[in-house]
Length: 583
Image (tube, rainbow, N blue to C red):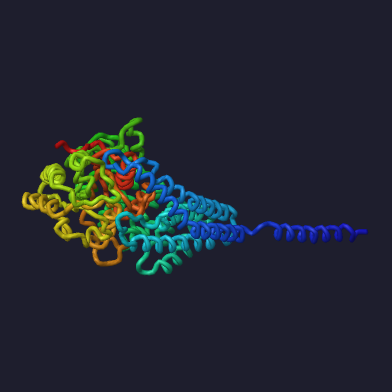
C-alpha cells in the first residue's frame, strides 16, 4: 500500500511528459511558420510579376489618354490624377512586403533561439536584392521620346526599402540583439560585403542604433574609427539614438577629418542629441572653422539645442556659453531648460547669398538649369507664335524661334551673375544646362553645355562672363530631366569622388545643388513622385548634397511635390512662387 502513492506520482510524471511532448508537437515552430509565410509571399510576388506587364500596359494607356486630353499642358497644368493608374500598380507589392515585415517581427518576439540567425539571413538576402536592383536601375538606358521605362524595377526597389525597414525593426526586437549583432552578425556582414559593398555592415549598425544598449555604444564607437566614411556616418547616426550614452561618439564626430562625417553628426544633433555644456562647447569650437553648408548646419544645431538667437558669430556663442560656465562645471547645466516654448530651431546664417528668393550658404554650388522647351519657350510666346496649344507628345521642335530662348536666357543669366558676384572670390560654382534625357548627363553631355565639369570655377568676372556660352551652345530639348538628374547623381560619384570604390566617398567638390525648372516633365525612369524622391534620399544618405529647387512657373501640385521633395529630403529649400519673367 505504501508503494501506490509512489507509483501514482511516477505515472503522473510520465503522463505530464507525454502531454508536454504532444503539446510541443502541436505548437507551431516560429521559424517554420516564418519560412512558410515567406514562401507564400514569394509565390504572391511571382504572380504579381507575371501579371505586371499586361497591367502596366493598360495603366500607361490610361495615363496617356489623360495626358492627351490635356495636350495643352504648357498652358494648363497636367492633372494630378494622371499617374493614378500607375500608382495603383505599386500598392499590391507594398502590401506583400508589409505582411513580410509583420511575419519577421512576430518571429523576433517569439523568443525562438534561432530567430536571430534566421532573420539576419533574410535581411542580408533583402540587401543583396536591393543592390542588384540598384545596379539594374542605374544601368537602364534612356527612353526614346514618347515611350516610358518599365516601372517594375522602381516598384520593386521601393517595396524592398519597406522590407529593409521591417528587417531592422525585427532584428532589434530579438532578445540579446546587441551581443549577437556585434559578434556573429558583424563578422558575417564583413564577409558577405566583400571589398566593394558596405550595405550589410550599415544594416547591422542601423539595428544597433535601434537597440540602444550600452554594449551597442561601445561597438559603435569602434565602428566610428573605420577608414570608410559611410560607415563612420552610419555609426554616428546610430550613436545619436542611444541618448546620453552616445555623446562621446558624437563629440568625436564633430572633429572628424571628413566634412561628410561632421555634417552627419550635426544632422544627428539636430534630430536627437545630448544637451550638455560640453557638447555645446564642441559646437562653438566647430563653428569657428566651418564653412558653407557645414557652417549653416552648425548654427542650426546650436539654435536647436540652446534656443538662442545668435547667427554665425562664434564670439557671440562663446560669450553666452561663458555665462553658463558655473553650471557646466557643476554638471547642473541642461540646455533644454534654455529653450523657450515654441522657439524656432532654424537660424538664418548671415553669410548667405540670394538666388531667386532662396538663401544659399555654401562655398561650392552647382546650378542645374532645366533648358527644355517649356522652360525656354514659355506658353504665352508659343501660343502667340503658333496660334494653338502645343502637343508636346509629337510636336516638331523646328518651329522654336530665338525670341523665347533669348528672353529666358537673359533673365536666368542675370540672376546667376548676381548670385555668383555675391558669393565672392572664395566661392566655387558650376552650371549645367539640361536639355535632354541623357543618363550620363554630367560626364558625357556636350562639354560646352557644362561649366565646371572637371573642377568648379572661381566666382570671378572671367568665369561669370562664360555663362553666355553655356546657354547659347545649348539648344532646348524635351522635358525628360528625371533621367538627367539621375545622371547627375551618378556623375557626382564617378567624376567628383575619386577613382576608388564609391563606398569610400572622397571629399565632394560641391555641397549644394540648385535646380531651376518650370516643373514640367515627361517620361523618365520614375513616374511616381514619392518613388523618385525616395530614390534620391537613399542615394543622398551618405553624400549630404543639399538641393535647393526653384520652380519658375506653377505647373500643378504634382510638380511642386517633386521639387519640394528633393529639397525636403536633403535639408534644402524650395521656392515655387517665382513666375515666368515678363516680356
